[in-house]
Image 1 (spheres, helix red, strand yellow):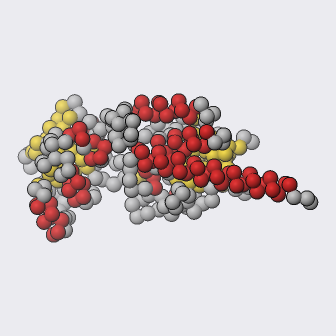
Image 2: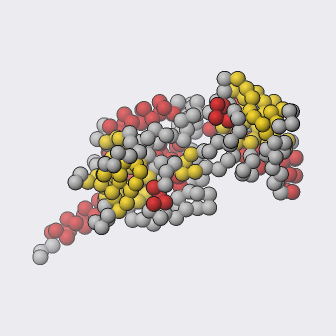
Image 3: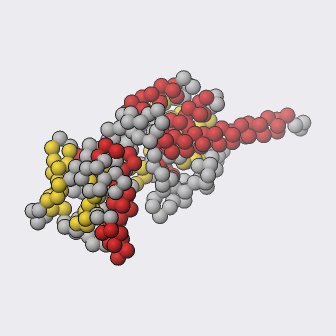
Amino acid sequence: MELFDCIIVGGGPAGLNAAVVLGSSQRKVLLFDTGQYRNRYSHGMHNYLTRDCIDPAEFIEISQKEIFKYGVQLLHKKVVNARKNEEEVFVVKDEEGTLYYSKKMLIATGLTDPLPQVEGFEEMYGKSVFHCPYCDGWEVRNKRLGVYAKNKNGFDLAISLKGWSAHVAIFTDGVKKFKPHEKEELAANDIAVITLPVLKLAGDDGMIEKIIFRDGTDYLLDALFFVNGFAQQCDLAETFDCEMSKQGKVLTNQYQQTKTRGLYVAGDADKDMHFVVVAAAEGAKAAVIINKEIQKEISKQRLANAKPV
């Protein structure tokens, strides 16, 4: 049985940075990557020094070259199941039924953003429809911006967008759910609240031009942001009965550890600040703790072996 020091599930920023740290610490690392990155629809990555506006795919390509020099093994396969056996070893199964074994495990699969079921969203997502102003606000600054928020409260997002443009409107698609103080603040910030049921987004080549309502009227826009919640990319953490927040994120301590010994979670899956640079930092932090834990275990075993029987 081949035993890895750590199996990392998820080849985004968190998983890749963890792989670099562990690989450079001379640990035996296996990284699983399906290529389903959360920001794969984005035209450019932001808020990461030296990598501002880089295409996400290019960032991944550069990062993967760095892990190979440290001997990290990369598999483009999906992990379908994981558990701990009687020897406290993690047993990971891929989509083909092959089993892999490791001392530690890091889940870095991140989140996914469900799109509203409205015509036009999928075609425009990543081009003129976005979910994060810190990621895409600069490119649409001072333009006509909108917030689509039917299933979630879009108040905070609408107020936030005023930092990028004076022209902000919020669309609730038939829902009327703002609290009195929220209505007052939206009005004070000159944010139009439009509750008409939405029919579709209209535009050309992925670029939104207007929202068309079911009554036949429309509203001109240059970009649309939305808040519709998020979901875990995979359910591996739940199979280990990890504690989850009300928002559906995995609860970890300051060292990215879960309540399952040897299991770590890093990246968007466990925190509120969903930046690439933060995910990468969490991956590095988790890797340092993993490396320290492995070294402690090796040292204790050496001490036990050195004692006379």
